[in-house]
Structure formats: structure tokens, C-alpha cells
Image (cartoon, rainbow, N blue to C red; front, side, top):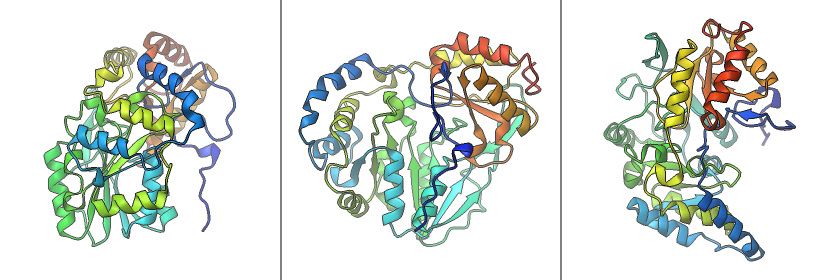
Length: 371
């Protein structure tokens, strides 16, 4: 089977592109918790001497901790080195035939489906989201739309909250959709990678497995440690068991198991060090500069750069020249994504500094809202 690795020139994720050297002075391109807990960092440091021994091969205690925290049975769970890793294995081993992707959506879903030989049906946005200047952005996902054609073997993916808009769905609506898909021979996968930032208020994790419902969770976001790949998948026991067997022993390493156990002892986003006040302050500062933003949830701000994609790309390069990395939203699917920028991570740690660099970069034309 051919491999489909992303072209570094077209890298559509936050962080450094493959082969990229050096580090910007301020990285606002990724969406992780910029305030990792010193307690966790110290715990990992104390754990390193134990890396000379093998970890527990099946991460049994981790699954038990997750199950107790989220009111599940351990048989419904599989842990692994990050949500993306679990996604690729799920699609490669499951019997799904087609992936339904309401946009905007994380780009790795389409790539994972391609690798697994699944066909992909992309569903354009069906709702207008209102920007802070009162104008609308046609990037919203409508759970109530009736035009979704569902076939047996379909797997629909929804993020809650959505990356990069921060749009949030009520749990009741997702469960209704899951029952509908299950009745027609399909299934729903809810990506809850950012649900911890919402204190799990709209999570459907406790219902994983019902009507074939699958829930994917990342812990790299809320812990602020994307370099330590941690995540888990919850769903029907037969799917979770098949994944555990296929991934084999030791698929969740020592440090990863420590992070999972530590995270399951925390209840609220503030227990992870997350504080949304810098994000809100940064959003208000951008709006004072004339940059329209969405009032979304999670560790991100989606803002409009200008009237054209070319100007958005030019602004990105101008900021990179000043040592600031941002991520344009063009990789999430809907057209004109390069007009939009998703801001997170270090911009929340240093909001005043980011705003000042952003203001200086805007002195050269790079969009209608940057002058």
C-alpha cells in the first residue's frame, strides 16, 4: 500500500512542519494547555529512573482508572500513544466502509480513511457562526440537518467542541444522532479531544458502546504535553478488545501510563492548570485591533485575517518573519480557510507580547482588519 505522508510545504497542523529546523520565539499555532501543571512535570522527572523496566504491558490500571473516572467498564477502553494513533488503528481494523466528515474537521480523519481504503464523504457546513463584528462565517455544523444520507457501514465523525471553531454540541443531540446512525447500520465517533477544557459538560463518554457509539479522547491537550502521546478510545467491547490485541503489549509506555493515571485523579480543567482568562483577554485585544473573532470554547481563538486567502497566507509569512508561528484554518476543509487563523498555546501565555507583534506585523498590508 502506498504511503501518503503530508508534503512539508503543505503541512496543515500546528507546530513545526516535517524537517523544519529552529523554533519561533512565540508559537501560537497549537491548541494545547499552555499552563502545564508543575506537579505533573515533577512526577515525570521522578519516573524517568524507572524507564529501565518495562511498563505494565496492557495498561490495565490505566483502563481501570479511566473507567472509574468516567463510569465505564474497562472492557470498553483501549489506551494508546495519542488520539491520532488510535484513530489510524481503529479505521484500519474496523469493518466500516465509508467515513462521513461534517466540516470543519481535523485533517487526519481523511488521511486515516485513505490509508485504510475507506471512501470519504465530506459534508459542507450547514450553519452560519456569528463573528464578533456581527458578520457571519459559514463554518457551523448543523446536527439537525436532514440531508445526511446514511448507509450501512458508515462512520460519522463529530468533534465536540469543534476544532477550530470551538462550536459545542449538547450531549442529548449527539446521543440522538448516534441512535439514528445505529438504527441505519452506521455508527458515530465523537472526538472529545478538547472536552476536558469544558469540564466534560457535554461529554457522551459514559454512553460509549451504546448503539455502537465511539468516543476518542486525547490527554496531550489538557496536560499541555503533546510530546508525551496519551489518549484513549471508548466503544463497544468487541472493537476495544480487537484494538488492544492488534496494538500488542507495551503500546502505552511508562511515561504515558503515569500521565493517564495522574490525569484521572483530576476533575476540573483548573486542576490541570488551565485558565481561560488569558484567552479571553487576547480575544478582546484582537477585537480592539479590528480583528473579528468567534466566541468559541476550548484552548483556541478563530479569527478572520482578511478578505482573501492570499492575504491570509501573506500575513502568516509576515508573522513568521517576526518569530511568531500561527496556523491558518485552511486544513479543516471549508473553502477560504486561509482567511482565518487559529490562535492558541503561547499566545495565551504571553497575550500582550503576541498582540504587540501582531500589531507591528499589521503595519504592512495583510488583510482588511489588520491596518
